[in-house]
Image (tube, rainbow, N blue to C red; front, side, top):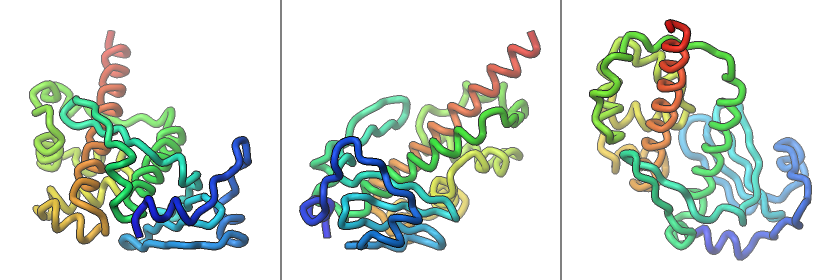
Length: 211
């Protein structure tokens, strides 16, 4: 089933309607589609127009019909993948990206105030290539790799691990994760944005303290 077909068989929630909790949705909602991705990660779509994304004990609920265009950033260049791009893809692709972004925002909020030292690689940061492939390959060779990867969501860790630690192709990684090649690229770009943002913010803080 494609995303377009899913939207045709699910309701559009009323504007201003309170989003149900994950527990309420699972207990009272009627699932029309569910996709098990890998390990403890899955996505489910419900008749009432909501999707439930679960990854390693964390849940997020969001409206299906608001999942349209998607901002894709690679090599410092931003571009939009239109809703039409996802319409003919398997229904879960766009919803997984939405769920992952929401869990990432939740995790980032919880991490406020947490301090991580990146001084071991600070002087070399500017020398890194401005593409997500070169950046992640470079990071995997550094002694702080595990500490850096701890900043990522579980799905981003898996994609980075498959492509760079295990040296698997995008196609192989996509097959294991149950997503398309383009989705793997998007997830890796999300990982780079997260690493770059977190690293730069910490680096700036350390410089300010030093001054």
